[in-house]
Image 1 (tube, rainbow, N blue to C red):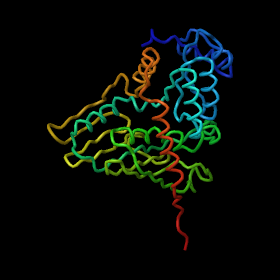
Image 2 (image 1 turned 180 degrees about the horizontal axis):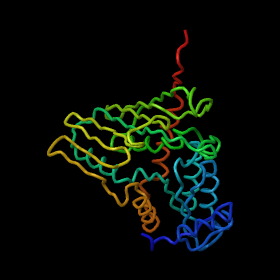
Image 3 (image 1 turned 120 degrees about the horizontal axis):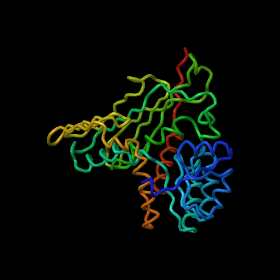
Image 4 (image 1 turned 30 degrees about the vertical axis):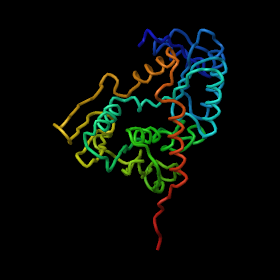
Length: 311
């Protein structure tokens, strides 16, 4: 993989670009984005800046003939996706949305188990991503104008994709928002850190997604999720540490599935490179990301703030 990519780095801060080159063994760096996009030696770019700037940089890259991998959440509005789709069609370049969770060995194995009907007809999906991990005060993710939304929009979108990418697609969805913290270090912070999402799949199964970055979890990060079928249950650690499937046939247990690529980045970049070389559509394309964004919009449109009742 490394020989397939020759990396350089660009930043609005030239010193930061130079530092990244030193730290990650790049071959060069640029003092700004325009310099990188104007370089004919650059074939593809990774847009890894706050979401507020994704649309502008993606369109500029495409118009200058570059293939693009744009981090997720890719864009802030549905119309942004359509604008990029038009630019993609006009330029004939590849656009991959950097949803590395789609490529995680955990998610690949879950899709395989469901496709093989190991637990029979799916009834419930229960997804948990809970831990106490507030961002530092100067982190741009705390600025909604930079991140595009609150914590669930910026980070929960990855789990929304996982829940909707296992085979059956999510048909209806609803969000519930607990009130912001009134005590402790987060008191007075209006930015919400938790969201409960309920949904129904197109095969009739129903599911729930528990997201929070303000609730302690076992060992500061261990979280269990489950898929319930009429013939068995799949239990998995939400970070991908293990999968236990009990259903048809012998129980299946995998510890650290795909350890070398546990976060899916290698597979994601292989897909990006293969799509460029073969002229094909990548798995995590704009259309798939647009579907996730529609679900996210529906979550917020329906979200009910659960303020405590007063006598």
